[in-house]
Amino acid sequence: MSSILLLNSGPHSGASHGYRLARDTLAAHGITEQQITERDLIRTPLPVIGREYALAITSDTATDAQAFDWSERLIVELEQHEMLFIVTPMHNFTVPATLKLWIDHVIRIHRTFHATPEGKIGLLKDRPTFVLVSSGGFHAGEHARQADFLTPYLRYALASIGIRDVHFFPLQGLVFGPQAVATALDDARRQLHEKLSLTIARMSTPAGAAVGYRQQ
Image 1 (cartoon, helix red, strand yellow):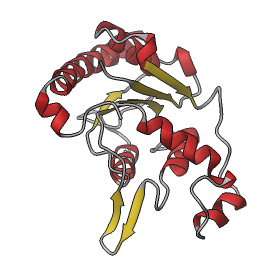
Image 2: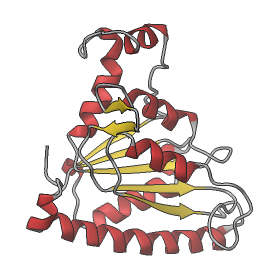
Image 3: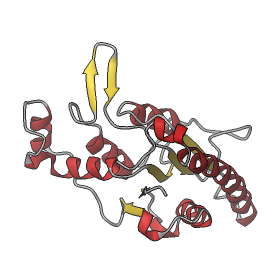
Image 4: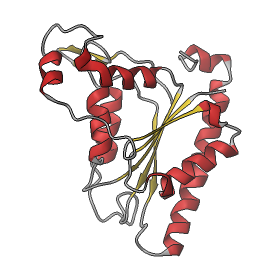
């Protein structure tokens, strides 16, 4: 069965609707605690990208240099898991600072991508990725009243390192009372359950193994 990296990037941590939905859905599919590695980007903040890293990334510094310590740790952690779950709020139309910092550590030239005249070529193996996006208002569908820069940005950022099998599940209208929250959760739960079921079935077949969905 799959090993899963669960990134939680919102200020409510374990109390967030998205986190509880992710956990409940994984449990409903028989995924155990031993198969999940959780990284809470609020409770355990990542260090900012400093001058030492900036100098190292623009030179011929070795991969195992101290300047890349956190970057390497996060990249290896990602490589060791077959699935990625990201639980995130939408902050000011895009990803929160906590998730952006994780992205900045993980997208690294010569390590997770090669730069070419045609753009970045990802070096990581693709893996199913599920993104639960919480917002107080509406950013998708017929009720959308604000721009959504999170979805295209995160899809592009992950693709730049080789992760293209990405699926988004909106949890919208969460400030409009208990009924709105219940409706949002029901919609997202149904969509997530269907997609996760299909993904697990796909990964269990020889065809799934052929496209790289195996433990690394």
